[in-house]
Image 1: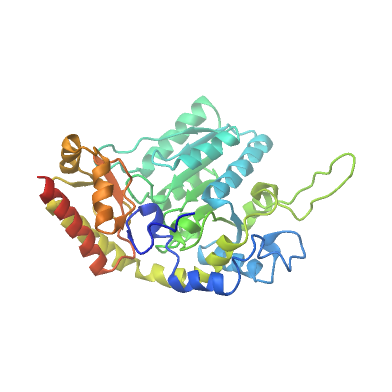
Image 2 (image 1 turned 90 degrees about the horizontal axis):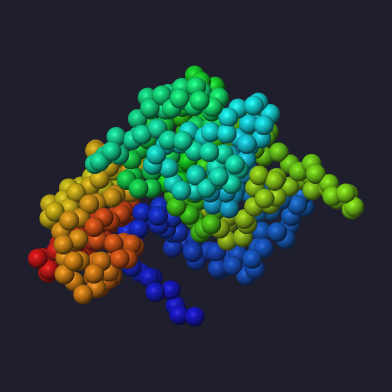
Length: 389
């Protein structure tokens, strides 16, 4: 197999910037032998579930994760989508017990995995509108309107789901205001913090959220796939309920396994990497204001280069950036490589992560980059536009 071809490149993919594993952790994972075997955490497992292991200290670590994000209980999951599935399945069971409708009210900028998780659990997603081009902002009041609509036509909504920072424009949704609406209407509330938990300070109690879903490999500097579901004492009883079923012939019991996380969740390198990086994650969120200022300055510089415009809310409050790029689009119409020219020319500058083949719109991030690296990115874009126009 060929060596990893993107080593030592400047990564600008917003899916990846918050998940860069620090050099010292990369080194430790291999020097300490955690990469020797896939089940590297399981040698001292007594209870039969990775979340209960104390050597290494996974059980206390999950308590630390829950506390850091303002929750009472946490379990690690197969990515953030696994956490969302756990929530949707919990809500499906509530729907049957309390005779609610099957409708989930989700923001119109939600990640596709929110919708897939709902579909897997036979729930139906309905969306309040956003504000449209060019900001695409989510409005809290529209959730109340959608609640009233669902109640009139179908009955009590099953769940409200909101994406804290969306994966398309990097808008920060009004999660606290939506949480207040959910609380006033007595509807369970999930916040998907895949793009925020671990890069900016968040607290699910302040959001009035019942469930918080997180992505370790997107925003917690960890190897993937790994996510977390954080919840409160009330919902932990059902979301993290253990198995009660027994096969009819053997009568075997699996009483320590949690069905909502597929019994026992991902271990090995992803989980160990997250445990190793968590101290630095807790420190870096304190510097979020500096990252926002750096990002705002980058937006201004990019828009000064040519016909490039940021989509999404202004002032921008997240590191994920979506630019509309007419200048680059015009170049692609005449270039023999079409839209692929952009990623290829950026790669020549040592920059990777812009989606290959796209030039009409691009998504990127400079989160965690040094001033020198950001200058390299800006100079490369300037050079590309000057070269072809």
